[in-house]
Amino acid sequence: MARPLFRALALLAGCILAVGARAEPLRIAVVGPLTGPVTQYGSMVRQGVDTAIERINAAGGVLGRQLEVAAYDDGCESKQGPIVANRVVNDGIQYVVGPVCSGPTIAAAAIYNTEGVVMVTPSATAPAVTQGKHYESVFRTIGRDDQQGPAAAEFIAESIKPKKVAVLHDKQSYGFGIASAVKKGLEQAGIDVALFEGINAGDSDYSAIITRIKSSQADFVYFGGYHPEMGLLLRQGAEQGLKVQFMGPEGVGNPDINAIAGAAAEGMLITLPADLSSDPANAAITKAFRDKQRDPGGAFQLPAYAAVQVLADSIRAVGADDPIAVAAWMHAHSFKTPLGEIAWDEQGDLRHFRFDVFRWHQDGTKTLYK
Image (cartoon, rainbow, N blue to C red; front, side, top):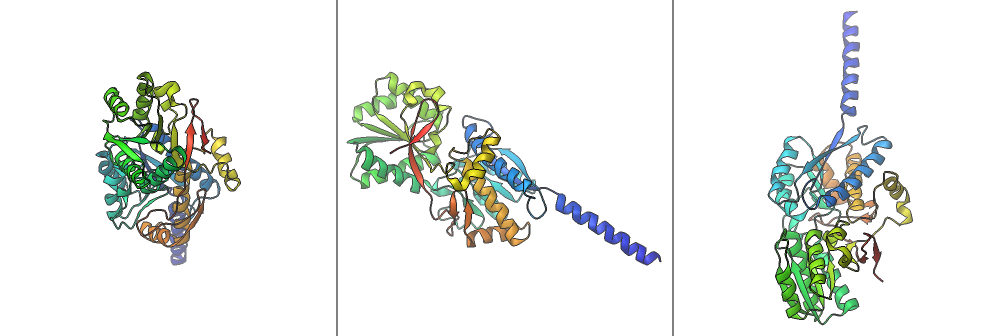
């Protein structure tokens, strides 16, 4: 009689262990700036991740497990990219949404790929993240600068039709990359790029470059970079009587720019991922954001939501918490997401992504340019 009892106890113990294993959370790392001058971009991504995880968990989770966020701060600094990536790996996390900024993403991607961690950035747009790298587990849910830059250049040439353009950048991976793409597109369209120059991110006085813009006789300025520098360029340009239209990429689309630029922020042009929060197909998702006082219409919220959704769908599809199999599934399939139906090329870049042009307003709202 002892042997059947032993078998019964062993079976019971096995069931308890199995239940415990199923109940163990499946962790997803969110990597981005929790500190520093561009923390709001990290907050945008976190809003998308949190909303997706809350909805997935409310529906039963993934393979019987609840999803759980582990947040890591890289400060949007390139040198922190590898440091944070090694922390994520050492903590045993196999799925990452982020990094947020292009610099640390470029620096960290090889580590994630080598260690078999699936990395999906919803915001790093620099081509160098993926171009020529042949990564197997690195993806984005946002377009590249060489998609956004040409879209901006085409808009400038066809809708603004300036005589001369000054193209500025912040000398960093993201800013220089997209400014270069805009410059190339403008030149191909026959627009005179009268000035192409970098500024130092973090400086407080851009009087010298504003003087050079005036001397170049540019009647339009494009800046590749982030909102702190764009805000100062707008404000100091207005103070010095520079009366030209400014435009920038999604990196300048931060409500904090209004506190820096004041009234000079009104009318700034900006390329952003298409605002799909008003799409009827996203009504339930949009409501979930707003129920938690989150903004579904920012640049990175829905791309971040889509990143989590695709990871969850792929884990379910392969039937296991196996990042190598998940990455292979992602490469081989398309997914219905809040961004529409998405699919990746062999580099992990989206085959299609839509950027629109918006006019920025001093109250922090934006309207589609028509």
